[in-house]
Image (cartoon, rainbow, N blue to C red; front, side, top):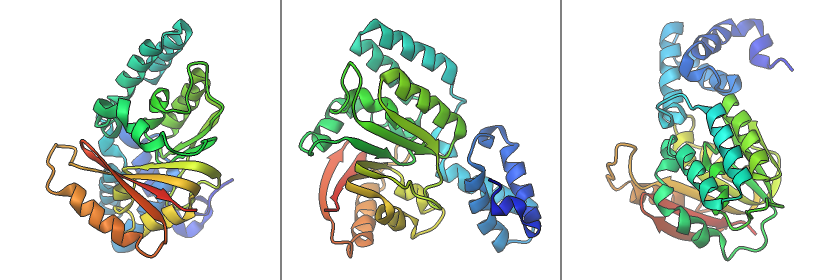
Length: 281
């Protein structure tokens, strides 16, 4: 279906902006709808198309581009995952998943605590049959550490979504290799949160990125997600390693954000990451 921003004659500049951004090697696989959403806001603030393109790229870097410094070798990784899976050696499979996750800044920061991260957050939850992973990045590669994953596969349905088309295709293949039923798709969660009812939703380090688009986008997303439990996390330090009271800053903002939601909150801390477990029901 041709979207409104593509078909409207009055959106010629926006179409040019989207094409210019996607011409960049860094953003050629990024959701065109997401680019259009950010680009439309920038065009409304300035008349110059070139300046709007430059600022849109800067905004997209803050949202997604900063987390991958190099182009991922997806084909090679899939082959390594298939070989590790076929070997039946769980530690070999985990080793490959670790290498993949080390390429993405967000999951790389969590590698040191993988053995305890999911045990602390998930072990006492009721049976989890349906999972949503929002703006997931490489997080689905952590499935072998999650309690609902088993060596022989999983009966848990795992829905992952991200802004990058090539990443979504890779993750779809990863789910198949791991034997996990599910779906990996391209989704702009600001405009259209996944229409899915689940037991558990991961919203890991997502809200600070959404604030670069709209201050209210994070709360709207949390309210829209149909899940009994949500795991919402925030970075405890910048990508450069500086802490600058980031965890305290994000905690204060988050508690203020959800103060009127009447949700049950539990707080967990890990090196470099602050996590809240929300129970909606």
